[in-house]
Structure formats: C-alpha cells, structure tokens
Image (tube, rainbow, N blue to C red):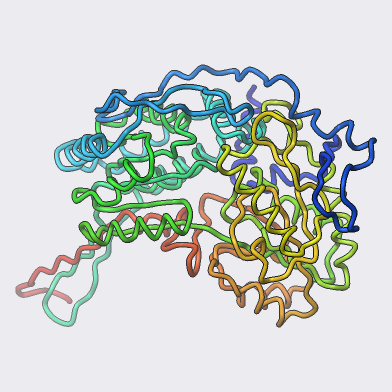
Length: 551
C-alpha cells in the first residue's frame, strides 16, 4: 500500500511520464465501417479484425467500487436541497443509465451560495486567520485526498468515463500535489515597500479579491477543481463553484473532505446546475468579485459579456484549442508516432490542448501515417474500470454525436479515412480511434475543435511553411514540437503563438508550470505563481513621513 502511494506521488507532477509508456500489448481494432478509407474501399474490415472490434465495449459493465453519498448542493458548509427542489440525472457514459439524481441549482441557489461566501469573507475567520493556518488546512486536505484516493478515482471514472487507472494513478495524485503546491504558497504571498521620490512611506499590498465565482468543465473535473479552488483559497478568498452538469459527483465528494480538514463554513460553496441558469447567474452576480471559467470559446465570450454587463468583475478564461503537433523530418518516427498518438487520444480526445493538427514533414509522411494506423488499431477501448483499457466512452450522447458528425465532415470534405470512423459497440458512447490523412488546412476537421478521438494528419515541406500554417488558427493554447535539432526546436518554440510549447514531450502539467492561451484560447494563466495574481488585488498605501532619517 505504501509503495503504491509513493508511486502515485512520484507520477503526479508529470502527466505524460505516467501515461506515455509505449504501445499497449492488447489489441482493440476498429469496427466495420461503411465510410471511405484511404485505399478507396468501402465496407467491412477483414474478419480477423472483426472478432475483436466490440469485445471490450460489449462486456457487462463492471460495478464501480464506490457509493454515491453526496448529491445535494453544498452551501455554507452544509449539504442542502435546491430551492426549487428540482434534481437532474447524472449518467454513466458506459451505458447512458442514471447513476444518481443531483440537486439542480439555479439563480436562487447561486444567491444563497454567494450570500454565504460574502458573509464568510466579510465576517468569517478565513481571510483573518494567519496564512500559516490556512496552509495547514490545505495540507490536511491533501492528506485526506490521498487517504480516499481510490474512492475519488472511482467516482471520477464512473461519472466521466475516463480510465480508472488514469484517474487513480495520475489525476487524483495530481489533485493532492496541486493542493500542496498552493498550501505552500499561502504564507509566502506578500507585498513590497517601494522607494518614492519624496518623504513618503509606500506599501504595495496584495489583498484577497473577495468572493470568487468559478465554473469548471467536465473533461477534468478534479484537476480543474484544484486549478481554481487551490489558488483562490491560498490567497484568502471565498468561493462559489459551479460544477459541470455532466460530472458533479467528484467535486462534491472532495469538497466534503475540505471541510473535514477544517475549512470554516461558507468558504467553499458548490452548486450543481446548468450553464444558462446557474452559470449565467454566477457570472452576472453583482456581489461576485471575480469569475474564472474553463470551457468552450463560445461560452467564454458569454461569460466575459455577463461579467462586463454586471459589475465589471475580473475574468480568467481557459478556453478551446486546435493545437499543432509538428513532426520534423529528423524525428525518430516510432517515437514520434507514439507521442502524437498520446497527444491526441489521451482522455478520449477530450482535452482542450490535444494535438489535434498533426503536421508531418513530407519525407516521413507516408511512414508516419502507416505506423499511426497500426498504433490506433492497438488502442484498447472498453470499460474504463477494466485493467489495461486506454480509452473509455465519450462523456455523453451530445458529445458522441458531435464527434461522429465531424467524422462525416472529414469524409465529405475529401480527407482520407485511414482507420476508425464509427461507434464501437451498441451500448454507451464509445467511438473507434479514428485517423484522417490528406487533411487540408481549410477542412472543418483541421479548423474546428472536435474534442474526440479523431487525429488529422497534415503534410508540410519546410519550417517557414509549417510555422505559418500552425499559427493560422483562431486558437493559441498549446503546441507540440518533435525534432532532434535544437535550433529547429528553439525557432518553433519562439515562433508559435501559443501559451505552451512542449518539445519532444506533451501534456506535461507540473503544478508550477503556468497554463493558458493566446488569441481566442483564453485570458490569464492557471497553475504556477501566475495563477495567484488572478485572486489578488493590489493596493498602494502612501504615508507622509516627517523628519525621516532616510528615504
């Protein structure tokens, strides 16, 4: 048990170190598809492949090793029903069946939560206790996360569909690591004494901003919880958190642990509900001082407008992406194929920074495509609670249908379907790992965020060309560069207009590394020291000096 815990902690800081360990030994080839393939054929795959096509997805779902205990709203330190008494179902993406009915918060519940957070900030002990005491509570919270690692991971997998091994061995340990990171910052936030041109004593104070509204997405519920709640609490703020309606369970569970760690009442409030009701009410609330949102660019624009039209609250946005993954001709093709596969297919492709535009130099393009196909055919798709599964179901029916629609756009737009292209099995929201070659920049699949297991492979012939094409996007969240040439790596790292460039690696999410985007991929940064700035006000205090001994 101790060895397993140590392994989790060791892997928590570098996501790719845990997940990028080479091709899986088991196989789960694509199912039959009537879509056009790269060789121009239509119809069924060879019978030898059909045998395995739906095996993983067709098995009876494994019973999750956890019970759902928290389904109400968390307001002022207590679990309560919504004001309307309404609930909504949260579904198991493996089957589409109901896991539990969760209280549905709306504007009245947001009012209640904001009132509790405001009282906790204005009158409660949280912002007034020493920073060291705040850090001790966050450290105790991290200890409790580790103690309940397996239950938290099981809830996350059940509600979201991501592989349990990913949740238990990587994401929950990262949650604990991130909370310890911010606990460590709590008593190291300080201001400055600034020399002035005259007899004045000048203090620059860094003060908590007040009540922070936060809206997290469904693809990484626990990690986004830590990215937002961690810095807000370390800085002495209070929080109203709205969970994604698809994945409310894990945030409710860990929030209860935070109160067990000693968090005062009202400091963290959690409202489950829908964007147009609870989310809009939070973003436009006149007594919320700050709003942070992770999600789509279109919704981010709405959040920004609501914040501006209400009380001009400050806004942090982490939005969509269409990240280029650039493979130069000096690359080790086998290694590049594996890394590009991970960059796109990780988390069922439901990752804002997924390497969804794979640019490959023309000299190695054909070899790269063939080896990418072989790797995709080995990808193990099935029940995420089953050991060895790499890819679970998509989050819900809406996302499932959207991905299939984009696959059709790719075929109709003239791209060559190399493998995949259809659903997997007849139950749940499983999709075959899908690859397109001969993709052109103007195609929908090369321009728009698919958020699913669909890899688009594009060809280029020189450095100047690929820089121009990679930057020709409304997004600027991240990029991957794969080359053995240091000069090429440095040129690309500086030329790509994105918030993160991974060189010969991908999805490295250390707690100290800032994350955010250029252009329409967002405003501000999360993680690292920069995230603290999102939750602090700066105040200058100037006092006139009389008979100063020195200035």
